[in-house]
Amino acid sequence: MKWPTQRCAWCNRPGNALRECTVRVWKPIAAKEETQTLRVHPEHEAAVRGYFARQRRSGGPVLYTVLGVTLLLAVLGNALGVLIERLPATVGAAVTVSIGSLIVALGGLFFVHPLPTDVTLKALGIRRSVRILRVVSVIAAALGGWIVSLGMDPIL
Image 1: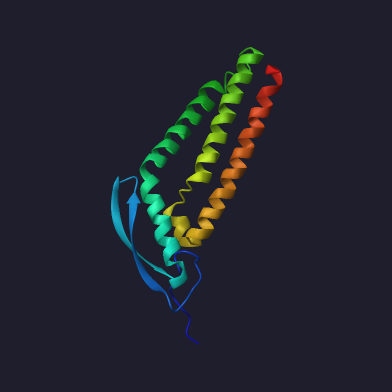
Image 2: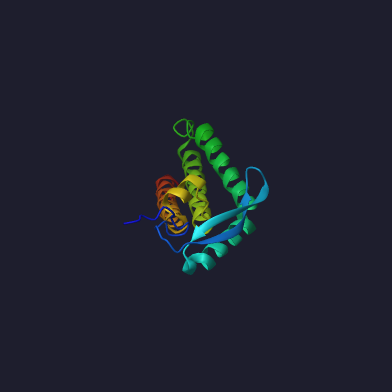
């Protein structure tokens, strides 16, 4: 029995009837577009082209927004998180609410524009990587909502 050696880039299932699909991919770190050739099942070709078209349209601005929000979270979390116990209750609660709100915003941004890594895409396929990232973003948004609720008690 001959085992198929190629896997579909969309669903990560092996197959013998894979087609080559050439797409333009935005590389945000290099800030340029590249051409990639992927192997996909014929029924997934339209989905792959649509995914990379959306990724190209929003890749640069979304990535930089995510990096900015993440840096803002890190700065606020490290600088103000240490001071929460030393601040008056209402100021500490306001800081907690703002940090939780930023986490909710980051989770929402990842849900709307999932940006999985290349390693995840190759290991799991595009469809599964996007689904996993969206589940993680919902968990992050819920965690941020919980943090907001922790900060709301002293304010009310």
